[in-house]
Image 1 (cartoon, rainbow, N blue to C red):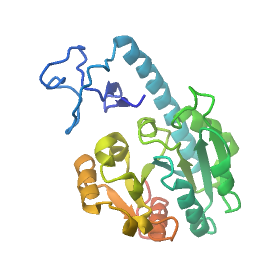
Image 2 (cartoon, rainbow, N blue to C red):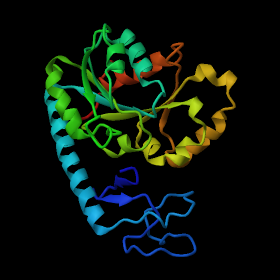
Image 3 (cartoon, rainbow, N blue to C red):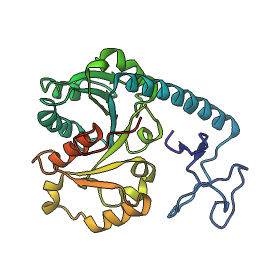
Length: 278
């Protein structure tokens, strides 16, 4: 699924460098009107997309969109704001959520949908902070689905007291590709990036970074020990998603967590801030 994502016409298009007529061109393997992105290089001739595969993907994404709309209707009916939190494995989402709950749970009614291929380890780490938690394991997929889709999120809703909540945060499965391709009914998307991943990641995984409303740059406490080029990272991020909101945080030390909590509070309609228009 990583090579496909829905375009505004709601049809999935390949991120590969082939034209729908399946013909490649010897100069660059692209057709001038193909759906490539700036900076695309390499030999993509080994990856082709047939009509049958596209038809299957259209059915999958179409069903996902239908369920995402139903999820959105359920959230709206309950008056709940939903944030889809995505990242690579190990970027620090669970630690961020623990710090978030320490600050917000005494004042806001929060639910967590915890997505993991296997185990309840992350869900267990968030117990005791005052949030309602629904765990979704994706291990029954093809060796373990690498993302949460709208039907998976829908399966978690009966296990959350939606009418009693203000905010639901979805901790998606750690992956820099597939989670960005599946709407789940969220209001906003936040993407966590760890400085240990390298400044080139926005260029290598543009769909993920482009889909985010907010990029959280985590593990800033490690910067003195890394060769991370913060200016190059910001240039690369601007190349794929200019003017996206960015917050520097350290879930370990607490740096920037208050600003993240303010961002969440603003979504909920804090005094002086316009709430989300549903």
